[in-house]
Length: 231
Image (cartoon, rainbow, N blue to C red):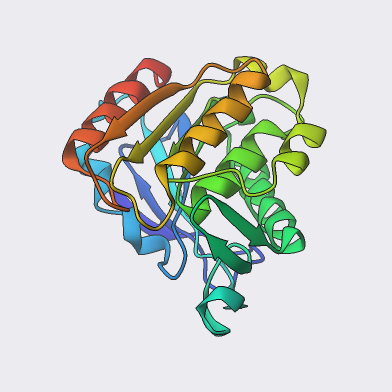
């Protein structure tokens, strides 16, 4: 398995890359949560137990640094600013969310240039990164291979619904949430799933007895799901 960075992108730090074998046929672009960085989910790759062939390239981009209003304005890696928090809602900076969508679209385009077209690209994200995965994947001009949305929500349903591309109705979605999550409430995760269902998308929906985190059981389920797409 090789590890290297990708030059030439409009990120302050190039994404981390892991490949499960030579000449990857599929790519997974995995976005971290608020205040973390691209290294956060590197360790999950071996635990997914994917076959060596076809090979998969994992990209772990680092969100830009920005001030986060709900965290007293502290500057940290964030895909968008969160203005205020409530148990069952978020007020966010939509411009930042759209900027992050543009960054992820760059990565999708670069994968196409490296021989992995969009129909073989899977977007994944945890928490804030999952919100970016939802918006980017379901408003992409052409269908992607799948979306993994973990402990996350849809902060601006209007952006997603208004930008939804009909061709994405058949995109497979794996959505999961911890039942003890006190950062992103389970109700927000369930609301996101309901938005998808209203668009005619039926995600594979999982609940785990977890706080705001992932478990080995969840990673194993994601690996099983990925193996149905990667062939």
